[in-house]
Image (cartoon, rainbow, N blue to C red):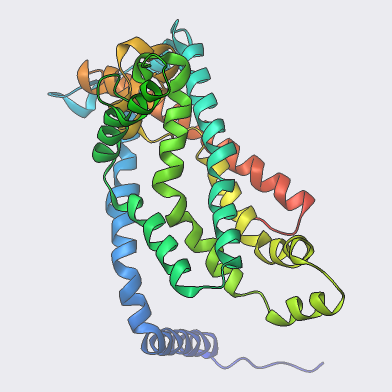
Length: 323
């Protein structure tokens, strides 16, 4: 019967060689892409320091957090603050206001930059196209404080531009900022005006990747502008549209706190009071940090469910998804 001889130390030598090859591969990869890694480093540090490191603080949602005793010395209370929020008389109103404002912002704010990008793509005069792009980009760089001040000033019942126009038509001025039924429309329109230009960038970039030969072939087949738009342009940017839609669905409940807080007042709380402003009041103004953090984590879990559901549905009905 043949015997197989094994040289002592062969396995260790193979492991050492494999380790050496891996180190050589990593070193070669670093040499080839070191500038890209250095460019990525600030982004990595930002997320590590400001996104991941603070996550350990979520433990206060299960504790009666005392600022002087510290996180770990505070008393455990389990799901007390989650139950408190679910049993809060304002729970349904807060959820309703947040959902409605988020859904309206998604329904009207999401297609707006797509439409603008499609319109700009049809413009043949480069100078006019650049002018429109520049003008539409600028509001994105204005702070929410200034935007909210502009909205309040334009809608003021005394001297506001909109009410001056209404008065010129012979109607009584309207106190827009004290009308609960108008708050959602005011917020959504201000969001569209502020961000429509900036959000067109991704769609304009997607439009440039469409092969011009597809348009030429469509022209030969007798297709007009609308048919080219429907059969060439929209399929060409469908990937970008689906990805941004999934991300926006996941952010439905993450309504910008700053602008809502600056635009709201007690007279319109019935439509303007959302979860983020409520968290600010109970967490910062009243000092109940555990309660505020519990509400925020609760809404984060719902947003996670939303984005997973949207991604699952997209993967089932199309070939596009985040993962």
